[in-house]
Length: 364
Image (cartoon, rainbow, N blue to C red):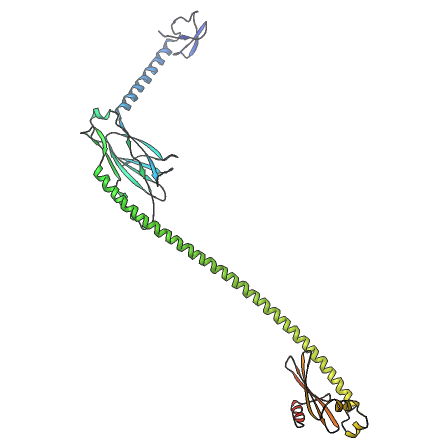
């Protein structure tokens, strides 16, 4: 016989037949129209009920101790730290801490646990929890939550962190107190070791700071050297450009001097040709007779003996010596060119430098 709960005036939904059936008004109780299907569904419902009871019994059987805490570093919560739990030497669970660095563990009774907390660039730490030793009756009680905060240290070169290869703390069940506690003497020993590590870390931090300052100083020196090298390179390049410009200017000056000298040589040659056609009159009688006005002018302008004059011309220095003796006069010139050449003349006719020096000095 099956109960059905009505939803409409002339029909209702059978929870075992899984369909609408016709019923009498006022939602009266009625028999299911498909007894075989009803029997099958009843068996399934009973099996589900038995499974639920078994699971409930198992949950009650597997009692556990709750562990919670916060992962910290330098008084700040640490997100993304890896919490790894080993149960009786085998992996049990692992996860990352959330944004506030907190974590929660539910450790079944009757086992040994190693909880390790780690994160990149930090020194890992661990602690142990032993849930063994409790009686069956004690296992079913609700124990207080174990609060296990963990502080991770940043890793510094030169600091010995080997002490953290052993547990930082040890939690265990104390049957005398019928409760969980930690090994106080062991924790005191570990905290003393931690203080020693903190001192070493301060030294390492100072060394790292000094090294950073030294590295920065070396970097600044290298940067300055690089800048100086660039300045020197620019200076060398500028000097090379200036040398090239000076070379070009010198070539242009020499070319111009050569052109000027050629012009002077041409003028001297033309003058010599003119003098050959009309040789200079140096006879006193000729001077007196007024045949050479140039000599007359020289006799009037210069006293007897040798008169030396320095004449500065374009790209040339002229040493001019006027020789006056009795009624005769001669004009000697030594032209010293800027490019180093020397040419000597007597009344416009080219003569050797030795002749220039000999004939002008003998009258002194």
